[in-house]
Length: 124
Image 1 (cartoon, rainbow, N blue to C red):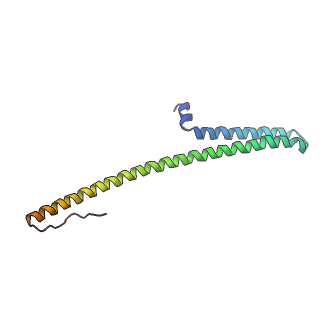
Image 2 (spheres, rainbow, N blue to C red):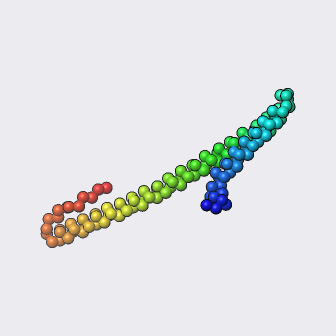
Image 3 (cartoon, one colour):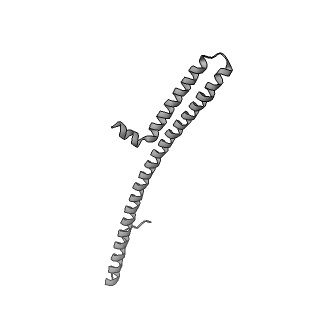
């Protein structure tokens, strides 16, 4: 599969991977910045910038990934609904045809004076 086609069709998953990798990178850079300092006052800017940005990017990545999964589920449910609707319409047409045949048979029997006996079971 072409990588650009994959990125276009799976834009939310691609964005999720990019955001998660970016969040991990920012987290690593923040940790490297705080590991070189001895004083807490010097570590706070790394925690504020790196830690919060990492949390934000990781959250965005998680939300994008879940959004992609939900979109896939909705697409699958939509396809199943279309199949069920087509099956129901086919069943309705079959029932209508059977009812029409039975009515025509009974009308023909009534006109000829023969008693009409139903051999067709019609279910609704």
